[in-house]
Length: 240
Image (cartoon, rainbow, N blue to C red):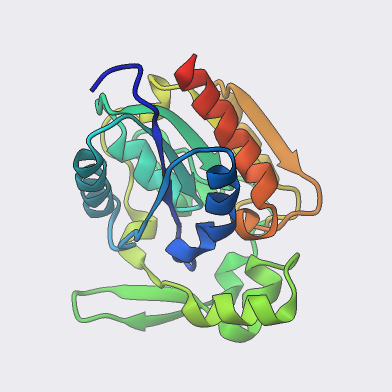
């Protein structure tokens, strides 16, 4: 691996989404000559999901820029720690936890999240519960800036997340302490309030932070051009 290799953009979805949620972003990246891979995040536990992501990165065998959406930010923060293949991090309406912090803890740090009231819980055979957003609440909660038909498709194809994943604290030193990071988020995010993202971006000494007016939590779907622009900033930094 050499520093002259073009980095691959590795996209990690969060809870209640799936890898196809990055389709619009990937199209924009391809138009700009950038290779991208969307990972199917298991959404089972921070440690286990991060281990899987490290396997994907190792299999690519080249430098990567890691991009995480929502809970995916937890995963990239752990998977990238002490990983020489990872050159930069991009948080898309995502958690950027410090050691010991969980998605649940960070989501309650500032007022504004209405996610708790939109969730349905049910037990799973591996123990504990998993959560999904009730389909009748999915549009307003997750992607209010999309049309009803697209929101219905996203609600039907959402990937549930375990209670363990949401309550797991980050172990070890977060990758954003040693890697350059960028942040982009929606002004009207009802899952992770804008104030929470701004706090995490400031703490990480973000190289670039962008708020998208009127945008929901499903930023990669509703505003792929804005998300792509931030990713390209990170890639440009890596290429130097």
